Length: 208
Image (tube, rainbow, N blue to C red; front, side, top):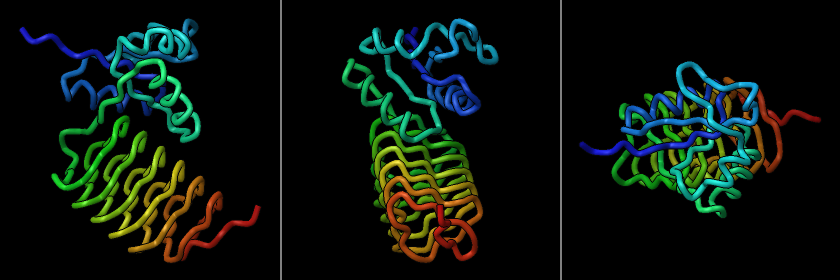
């Protein structure tokens, strides 16, 4: 009998539950780590066996997925755990449509119904959420998050740790630069500068 691979998921939130479901569909046996442990010992039927420090101390024993929506925290945890010997597979739902010519790096998560088309590049730690569309030649840089039903037309670049909100649309060849946020339902037709927040149709920079 083939032995199931074990996946350690850091983060026992709703996002973590979705990641666990996808992982099981890919043949993993799932365990959770969460910083609410030991106050919180279970998430649904899955066991939480330790906190992030416990995982850090045993990282070399596991394949790991960081199920934390906050891009900066996800980046920090993945860097720490990789330095400690953790391994970060791509976790992709079997119903995601991923081109054989797309590139997806370690630690990325691709959820149900997502589309990643030819020659798109998805770098490490990226989340491509439920039913998001990443068209041909897009570049998704490290630890960005493409939310449910967001659509990136061809050749879009999303910068490191940027967040594209649910249902947002980004016009072809537009850049959403690093650490920026695109509000849910917005339509982006021009480049968005680094660390900006843009909302509306068409999207405009929101003054802080």
